[in-house]
Length: 82
Image 1 (cartoon, rainbow, N blue to C red):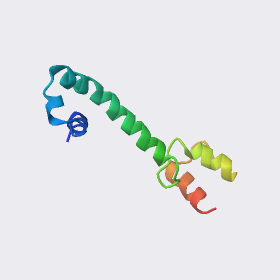
Image 2 (cartoon, rainbow, N blue to C red):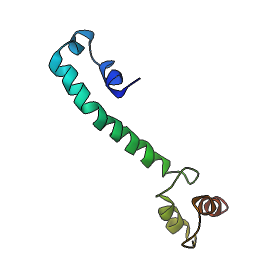
Image 3 (cartoon, helix red, strand yellow):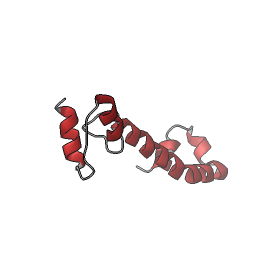
Image 4 (cartoon, helix red, strand yellow):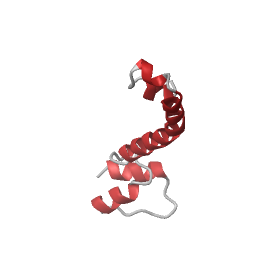
C-alpha cells in the first residue's frame, strides 16, 4: 500500500474525491515517507543490535575503544559483551 493510500484511509471518503485534496496527498506522500524512514532509522540507533551511525554514541557512553577499520558487526559485538 502506498503512503498516499495510507493517508487517504485517515480521511472521510468524500474528501478524497476532491481534486485539490488528492493533489495535496500525492505531493505530500513522499515527504511523509521520508519522515517515516528517518524516524525508523532513529529508532534503530537506540539499540546496539540495529545501530549504525549511533554506534559512536554507544561507544562513548560505555567507554569502548574502537579501531578505525573495525566493522559494524565487531563494534556491536564489543558493545554487547560489556
